[in-house]
Image 1 (cartoon, rainbow, N blue to C red):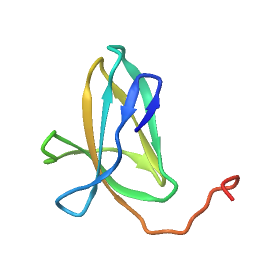
Image 2 (image 1 turned 90 degrees about the vertical axis):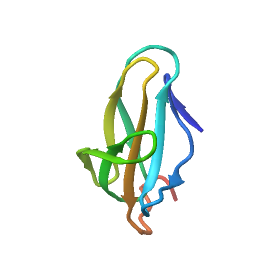
Image 3 (image 1 turned 135 degrees about the vertical axis):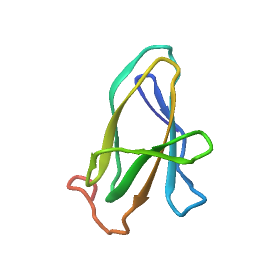
Image 4 (image 1 turned 60 degrees about the vertical axis):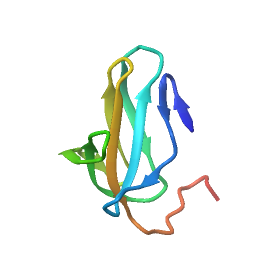
Length: 93
């Protein structure tokens, strides 16, 4: 599990529709503005989902991540496709 400030990121999991699922929650009761999720590979088709992973609104991201806000104690679920790549960022070698 990763944590940044008060936003907690449990591990990724495979979705029932072939997409990857990330569930995020704010644990301290404080708003979390501009929470950024970044991957070491490309992503596509990012969308919010409900707790049973039904698809929702599409999220605008960039090639390797996306940004969102969380209200106090809010839980958000995101679904996306990871691109297969051997991309390594500078400094990760």
